[in-house]
Length: 124
Image (tube, rainbow, N blue to C red; front, side, top):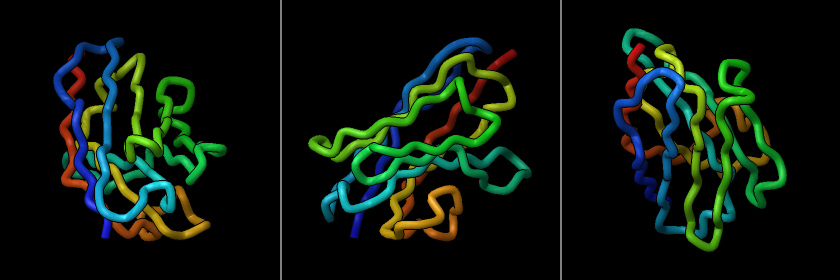
């Protein structure tokens, strides 16, 4: 079992930045791919970013590439999402997730564990 707790969400003006953190506990997080997903009101949950076990590979959706950066610190069992140049369309609940699989890092169905989510609101 892996428990995940997100933090760092909040209200920010367009063009601003936020850094989300996902603290994990339970089994060694270095055994899992870490991912971030988001869900806006009335929309389906969508992939944002993912990072492999060692941090050697990262993945981004087209909508955030170049603005968001995912990273991890396995010694601290934490995954981060640095969000810059935020836009109102980035407003959503952001979820951290962990996957034990070696494929499908961009697909929510491959993730085994999920956090409760943290709200990010970007005002125009």
